[in-house]
Figure 1 (cartoon, helix red, strand yellow):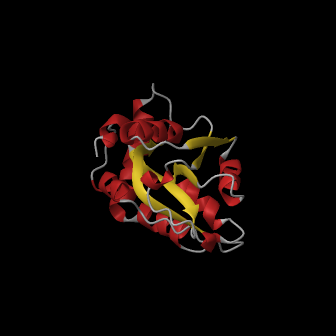
Figure 2 (tube, rainbow, N blue to C red):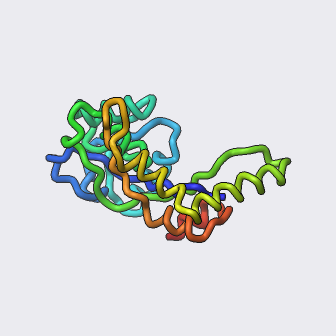
Figure 3 (cartoon, rainbow, N blue to C red):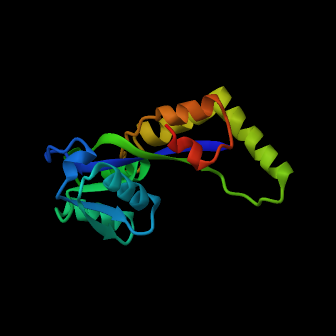
Length: 180
């Protein structure tokens, strides 16, 4: 069952004036090599005619460093990864997540295909947590409240897509979520 719906977003320096992907025409956009965000970024580029230069980090920390150091004007990635990097930055207030959702991806727990009784037990437990509010409380604890020891606050609100998935638990494929 889908436990979370990730949204691909844009992180920028707060003073950049950038508020949408369309404002990245002619600019450098960082993303992490080998991620689905690269595919979504290229799809958007082809669909809109916005032309930007891709710069790649070897991992998410490296991609954020490209933004932090000014070698990129934006970092496009999963919103939770962006929010986590911003929360752990030296000056988190220097960055913000802006613009439209570029893509969504359902996230679920990976398990063996050949054990339907185990899948049923896991799904039943997760669905119970969705319905009784446990997942919402965990979200609040880890994404909205200060996290020790540095008391960093990720500040990532629960997306409408995730709220919908929790209100109607399902195993729909990623393609169904792209038809937003």
